[in-house]
Amino acid sequence: AQSVAQPEDQVNVAEGNPLTVKCTYSVSGNPYLFWYVQYPNRGLQFLLKYITGDNLVKGSYGFEAEFNKSQTSFHLKKPSALVSDSALYFCAVRDRNYGGSQGNLIFGKGTKLSVKP
Amino acid sequence: EAQVTQNPRYLITVTGKKLTVTCSQNMNHEYMSWYRQDPGLGLRQIYYSMNVEVTDKGDVPEGYKVSRKEKRNFPLILESPSPNQTSLYFCASSFQTGASYEQYFGPGTRLTVT
Image (cartoon, rainbow over all chains, first blue to last red):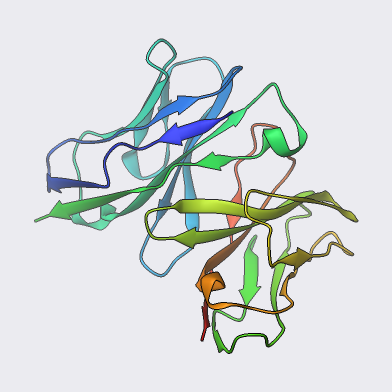
């Protein structure tokens, strides 16, 4: 069965410092991996995805994520955090070898990122 | 503007009173899905549809119904709402399913059942 774990409920970072939001996954085959962000009172917005190729993926708002197959991880990173980055972040996985219900996205429980001035 | 719209955005209702939350997308997407978001549980899929007249259960379908008569619309129906269906609901769509396409989310519907 597919699963996603975001081990931290909350991450606190000072503005200007680098940030990391962790994500590990479990799928039986090869994964498609996604990060979404949810700002207060808004729907989820797509940030970036890993499909194939370069393990370092760059996305919106200066975010990037590194796919590590051996550690089954896809951590979200940003070199210099902004107060406006404060939001709820979701990691999601889909097993590329399956269609139908097994091809659906599975979301982690979310990590609240708080960036203080 | 490409978007997913949901209505209503906020709804307070009483136990047993049937309600429908509408969802519409203007991107000609094949795949549409409903999720509920609860604190500490993340997003859980309720139902999904891979195309017109093709729907299937997600992880938490009990107490919900859906239909997909047109490609753009995917309403969520609660025939007899109960307090445990109080939640934040999101509709989403993507070009296809089982592939690399990201999902586009609506703004959410906050439902309270008393």
